[in-house]
Image (cartoon, rainbow, N blue to C red; front, side):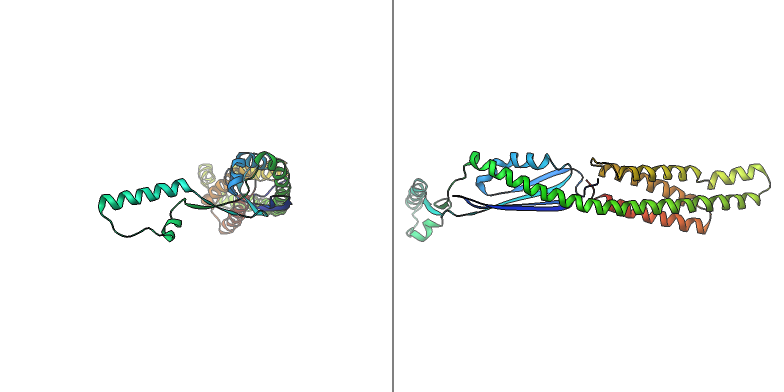
Length: 275
């Protein structure tokens, strides 16, 4: 079963004496696995655990985890008296040393960095982790289901495109055979016919492209992440199609190859979002 790398999952829960915790998970396509966490200060110490839980279920993509806490506890005001005293001593020293006039008022003092700060109930990390882990697991479940749903849709589209490629390739094989016979019939010597066939023969490219299409279709039904493999196979398909186009000696044949290249390009765009 294919999984998309795009998805969203979220969960929230009221926790007594702490408030409402909400978790949002967003994932987008990425070459590798990357997890970014945005959380309140009290939760940052749990970053490694949060990432480990997410990455045990997700193998590829760029994931953003946002944890919010709407605390039910009231905030208090804290004054750093030692820092305030140091500021005042420094001001007096500067006034005396440089003969600076003027007075320091309360409005200036409260705006000095670190003098006044808001305090809130600290998060007991070991107590909150089991609850956060359970909520995180539920959000990851939502994310995985969303990625699976889009993955199923992508698999259907890619299978249809692979089927179209097979039909187009069959038409190319038939057209090439007819064109090659017609052109060879106009030539007089075996050497001329051999030289012509050397320049226009795309039999090997057709066979290799046929193999890649079958391999691609087979990978679509596998359970493990195959996004990187599918991307590589699509690149190889495009390589064979480009060679076929370069060797084409017939307008109808060229038109068929253009259709093949168009289908492959669309496939390459879509496999970029597969895990």
